[in-house]
Structure formats: C-alpha cells, structure tokens
Length: 211
Image (tube, rainbow, N blue to C red; front, top):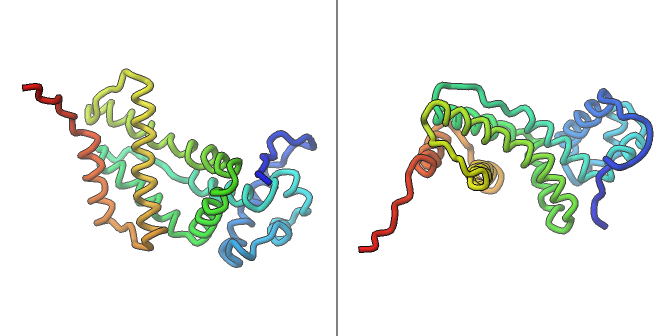
C-alpha cells in the first residue's frame, strides 16, 4: 500500500509544540534504536503524547522519519562569505556535517530505500527535502549574479533546469561521498569539489566549428 499524507485528514488543529516534540523524539529514537527498531509507540512515549496523536499526523513510520530528517536540513544556511567559492564550501561543509549525524544518516538511507517501492513516499522526500533545499541554490546563484561572478539567465526554463542540475551535483556528490563511500567530506575534499563545480558553472560552451 502506498503512503498517504496526513495533510488532508480532518480533526483538531495541529499543535506546533507537539510536532516539534515528536520530530525531536523521532531523531532521538533513530540514534538510540536505529531505523529497524524504531516504533511509533516508542516515539510517542519519548514525546509525551498519545500514539493516536502520531497517527493523526503521519500515515506511518516512513513519513514521520522523512519529516524528522527534513527538519535537520532546514538548518542549512547560506551566509554571504564574499565569493561564490566560499559560499559553496560553507554550505557543503554544513551539509556534510548534518549527514554525519547518526539520525540523519540512518533515517535518510532507510526512507530512500523504502521509497524504491513507494511512489508516494518518494514524492514526500522530493517535496519535504529536495524542493525545500533548492532555496540554497537559488539564493547562492542570485548572489553570485549580483556580484558578477555568474552571468544572468533570462530564460526562466533554462534557469530552472540549471538550478536542478546544480542541486543534483552538490547533493549527489556529498551523499555519495559520506553515505555510500563512507568517506569524510573534509575541507580539502570540499575545496576540490568546489573547484570542479565552479569550472562547470563559469566555463562557456564553445560553438561548433563548421569549417
């Protein structure tokens, strides 16, 4: 059975404080128990709420863990460090630090694996994590364009395609480095990766020589 979002369920208004407590309890349970042993009952006990409170908000464990992990990625920031290279290095180091946390590592890998047979869960990951964090690409690109480091992109369709590609390159590289290869994304690796990414962003495609 595919996952369903709790957004359309009728009932009493949601409590932001309860949501915060539940998501924090979910992350604590991921650290203490791991994905396989985590249960909604344990999360409810840790959060100090009834188990029915969780079921009114989330269809099951998968959706709950996605939202708990998504809240971690909402901590990502893109402070102005003076150059595009420095901005990229800063946010990539933050991203790697989050992925190094056991609750992010176990939760993300588990829900991605589950999503291979659950299209609704895959869409929830896309909207709750991927789409929300593309804000960093849009913000960083706009800042770099204002500095004159990147050219403007008047074609909105092409600009959106480029933003998607940048996000995929950054997220894919860091996730593969830290979670798949189990290597550290340290300062040296981040600087090297940033240089490769910048080369692709700032180089211009050459016109074919018809002669």
